[in-house]
Image 1 (cartoon, protein in one colour):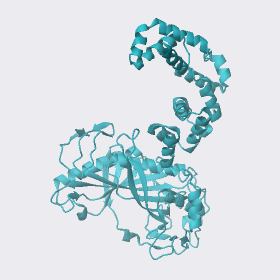
Image 2 (cartoon, rainbow, N blue to C red):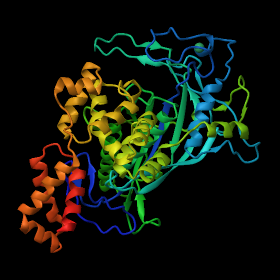
Image 3 (cartoon, protein in one colour):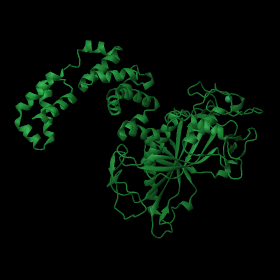
Image 4 (cartoon, rainbow, N blue to C red):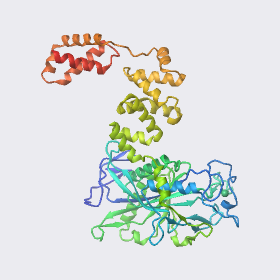
Length: 535
Ligand SMILES: [Zn+2]
C-alpha cells in the first residue's frame, strides 16, 4: 500500500509496531504496517482569557492598535515592578487540575510551593531581555489526558493515556511584523502581546501517529475552551503547538530492539491539519535519512534540531540546532515572591470546574441512551449545547429523539446562521414544543416549517397557517378500519406473518400509510399488531 506515493512492504515487526489497519491518513486508506514507529510529544502554548496581562494592568485583548496596550512594567523600563495576576494563576490551576496534574509537589519543599524564574535571551520583541517563566519548580506536573485512539472514533472508544510532564505559566513576548512586500522594508515591533499570560503544557512522547497527535490536541482544546481558560484559536495564535518527532526503527541488533532517530522539533504549526501532515512528513523524512545512514543517523549523535513547517509546500525545513537549556541562564526572579498554593484554593477551583468532557460523554450515553457519535457531537459543541439538549430531552421525555431532532434541524441552522446556541432564537422549550407538534410530519415538512419560523421569526401556528403544512389528524377508529381492510385484502401476507415471518407486517404498515398519508407510523404499527393477533 502507499502513502504519498511510497510503497511499503510488510516487514514482520512483532511487539514493536502498532498496526495501522484501516486508519485514514489524510484521505488515503493506509492498510499496511509502518516499517517504523512514530514517537511524538507536543508542547502546547495557550493564551489565557484574562482581562489584563500577567504582571501589569494593561489590557489582554487581541486586535488593539500597535503599541497602545503597554506600560513601564511590560516594556521593561528600569525600576518598574511586576505584580502577579491572580486570575491568570487560577485559570492555569484549573487547567492543571483538569489535566490530572500534581500541584507543585516538589521534594523537600512545602507542598504547593512554586516560583518564578527569568529565562534570559535577547530578541527585538522582548524588551526586558528576559522572559518571566517557570523553570525547575513549575506550579504543576505529572498529569495525563485520555484520548480516543479507536480507528473508528465515532463508533467505539479505545482509551489511550497521554502523560503530561508539566504545565507552567509564563509571559508571552511581543510580535515582530516583517515587511512582506519584498521591497526590503523595516521590521516593526508590536509590544501589545508582551507580558500576556501563556500556559505551556508539555506532554510525554506518548503519541504514535499523526492521528493520535491530532486527537490529543482536539481533546485538549475542548477541555480548555469548556473551562473558559482559552479560546484556543490556532489561526489567531491563542493556541500554538510545537511537535517533537522522531522514529523507532526495528533493529534486532540493538539492545532495545530498535534504533531511534534524532529528535526534531517542528515549529510554526498553525492548524490541526498542519500538525498531522507535518508529523507524517517528518517521520518519513527521518526514515529516508536513516536508511541512507543507519549507523550515523541516531538520536545520540545529534543535538535536537528545530524545523519550520511550510504548509504551502507541505515540507519541514530544518532551521537550527536547539540551544541547550543552560544557554538561557535561568535564575529565580528577584522581583516576584514565590507562590504557595493552598489545599483550600485547589478545592475551590476543583468545585468550580463542572463536568469535564470525558465524564459528560459517558453520562450522555448512559443517562439518555445516546450512541457514541451523538454524545461526542453534543459534547464537542460545548456545555450550552448540552444544556439545550437536556432541556429538550426532559420536556419531550425521550433523549434519543431529542438528539436526533436537534441534529436534523438545529445544527444545520446554527451553521447556516453562524450562531452559537446561546444566540439561537428558538429556545429549548420552544423547540421541544415544535418536536411534539410536528411528530407526525415527514422530515421535509419539518425542515420547511422550521425554516419559515426562523426566517419570519414567527410562531409554529403562524408557520403552519402560512405554509399550509399541518399534521393531519386521524381518529383511531378510522385507522383501525383501514388496518382491518388491509389485513382482509392480504391473505398471503397474513399467512406469512402467522408462519413466523414477522417482518411481513411491514408491508401492511406500508399499505395503510399509503392510503392514509401523514398517519402516525407508531399508531398504525400498534393497531396492526393488535388486529393481526385477532386473526
Ligand atoms: Zn503593561
